[in-house]
Length: 190
Image 1 (cartoon, helix red, strand yellow):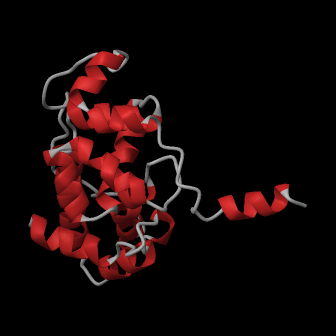
Image 2: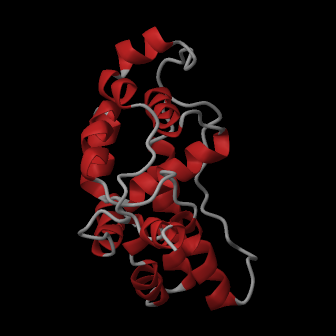
Image 3: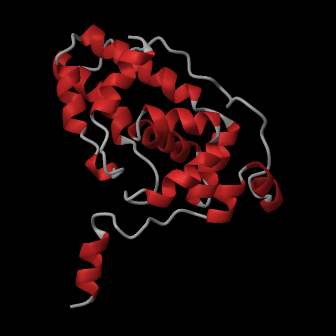
């Protein structure tokens, strides 16, 4: 599966309201169920290549600022979230990770900014189709190190120099409009 076909599937299930909770995982799963197991593996390989392309120190620095710290796993789930935002946001973030500050100003989804679920979809669908995970191999070699130049994420000056908008924004705590926050507020008011 080429990248254009991959993004067509991903973009078809992206929420128009920028709410992660509204990403239509069911729609993506249903579309993958129309494929053969081999087709699902091709999608999984395309996803792994997109995840790997985002394995970059500058993007990791952006995730670190957004999260207020970012482990290996959190960075993988951050890249899942980035994919779930669609091809346009993904490409802008790869070209300029600091552009995520502008995107997050209007983002209505919940914090933290991560999405493990989207990364698991091809595996889940493959298991449903075959009854096993035997043969679930994408053949995509995962890079050992991120691309780009590593720097000290604990240095405020370095973060401000490299990612000024995100550094000024600070850790993302949500914009107060995510589902669940309203329920919390209602419970506190009782």
